[in-house]
Image 1 (cartoon, rainbow, N blue to C red):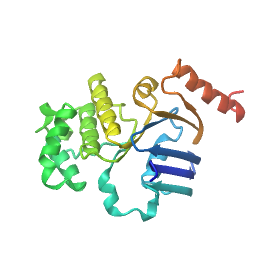
Image 2 (cartoon, rainbow, N blue to C red; image 1 turned 120 degrees about the vertical axis):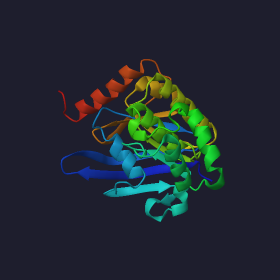
Image 3 (tube, rainbow, N blue to C red; image 1 turned 90 degrees about the vertical axis):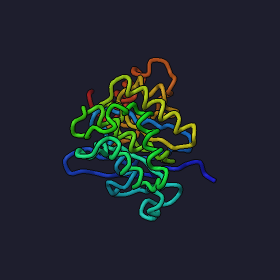
Image 4 (cartoon, helix red, strand yellow; image 1 turned 180 degrees about the horizontal axis):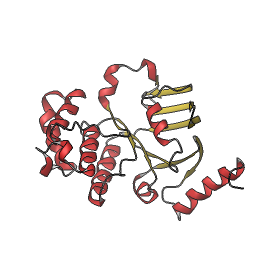
Length: 243
């Protein structure tokens, strides 16, 4: 049985007003944290949205557990988790009620309350258990969204810039949560421009520039930031940009 759970094969998506993604090949395996890094506007969010069917690819194939995206059973999505662009946090609901709703949408069933209690503890949300999301800071709403995406122990996870709104304590909690999920066999795709944080958790790092995959970085390589900008600069020069 293949270990690949999420795969993009020659996938493109264009936009009239700007860069989309072009001819992207990418795979995420069981037990792996695969990071996508790039400058703002490189196409990271577009890639994430195409990977989970929020945007339709113009060409190419997205496969989930070897099945084309259009043919994936509805039940498959119960075992997936994502946070792309905005966290799932209804403003009029408390942290606990938001998480209960998310758990039930993922088919958790009778264990929903205990799953929510574990998520509240894992993401440090006890003080906000009964606080409405609209009364929380952006960072705490983001924690609620991450907890909702991860509490049901999904087998495939897609997170777009998950550390952006988090304070250092939140970043550490997220790091632990992702490492635990990967150790349990989850396939995790995460985008970021925080190279230091990516280096702490990623098994693979793919560099995207102007909508294309242009290279990879070793997670534990020396001077990761310099290596990243060298890949970007070389790609720009090869395409006649910044000469």
